[in-house]
Length: 84
Image (cartoon, rainbow, N blue to C red; front, side, top):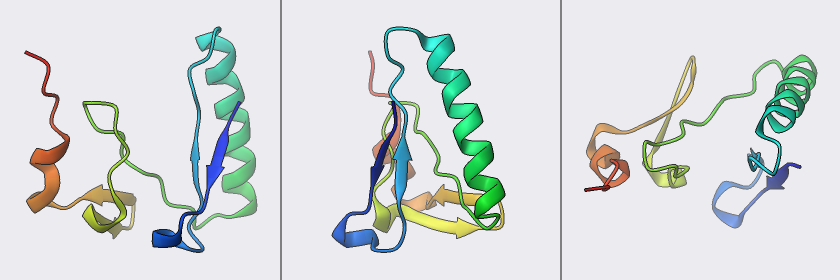
């Protein structure tokens, strides 16, 4: 399964997420195949960082780089793992 979202704060930038599901290996295989097809169709695609706490950063906390998106230094502490 995959979710594709294009919210009002990022029109034209669709975020695709992949739940782990009941069979993590099958989900990982699906994700790999789909992402290869997407990258072949749209070579300029940019990847999103997944934070230690599992979050996808908010749009205004991201900076576009040649390697995809990264979280700005000023916002990084918001996404640190808060597990005791």
